[in-house]
Image (cartoon, rainbow, N blue to C red; front, side, top):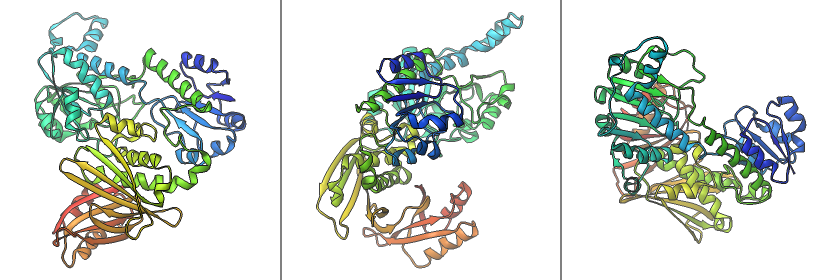
Length: 527
């Protein structure tokens, strides 16, 4: 078998490949035309971010069994086309965690001791200490937004600086906070009002983009210091610049920016702003880890061994994909409902298979449920293979069971999410061969085909509600593609609507919908 390495990776990774007994071709500057012309000869392909592994390339790759992405994301790979052809896609999500953590700490020290500014001053021919008066980290409060893998590493190390650590992560259970020995902020506002230093470690999602802006800076103490080594755009950069100018934020340091590469920004004009060119993973060790990991994963996939970082369907044979694929889609759809409708940390997930679906490989469907469940908050960090491990790492117990056919449906998937004292239930089935339908949302019975954008509305069960909502959507120039209404069986004064809409409503449009009288709650669900 042959592996093509189509982009530069660390030499240790090349050494692993050369020692695998497989034939290796290394062309780190290959053109698109050449890649298309020779890809049919290869069983494995390794890329970073430049070669676009799209449907055209995959169709030409008649022997291809695995694509390795030397990095975290897989934006340059057509995942659906790869899955349809039974091609495994692997990446290296954990290889740069320590490097990103250590850069965060380096920037925290830099913003409190003015290290870059003092260095630049001396090299420009000056010698003076008074304007580089610093502050100690010891005894101060460090706030961490996002207590995932990297946030946890930062917390562990900064305790050695005698800092008081407080974190905000609404998707992490109390038990995980106790294990990390970190105080839990029940709201972002609580954390922001208390911190002397702030660092952010969340994925980039619609919920986190711009999550710290002018309103949030106003909540903080005067003279707070902030750092971002996660994703560009999590801080509102215009608001950050204003806060730095006013002194509300004494100093800031960012390794990531909303648009990259970025050679011109109002932030660059400020002496109290430190910036690095997205070097969180740029260490010898991280790049070595990435190279070795992607090489190991690709070789293991070709030899039929366990592939820990596969992001699609490594545990299915190509001929089984079409049979189970509709239920994988259904599982992800059911999983995606919870975090878009509720915010409580999850303690347990129970997936029940009723009827004929229980005859399939339900383990991979459960993984699809977990992938959908965590995808809104973790994005590319969750995949079919690591889904159970991610759940376990977040203190979430996963239970799977099989039952006889339920009610009117010969095949039904029921997902129960336990959070605190409540259990939230979501059910779905497949119509025909490949038509997924949601048939229950937490006790409300429906029969709808999930659409890209849907509103889930809880409202008073009284005449005229459909007309009111339809009118405000019309006023907002939002077209309705489908609508269903279900009264509550528990409360005769409550009803729920599911509304398919033609576009993603803006924040202003959502506020307009929420302002309709007798509407209690509106949530946007993206499928």
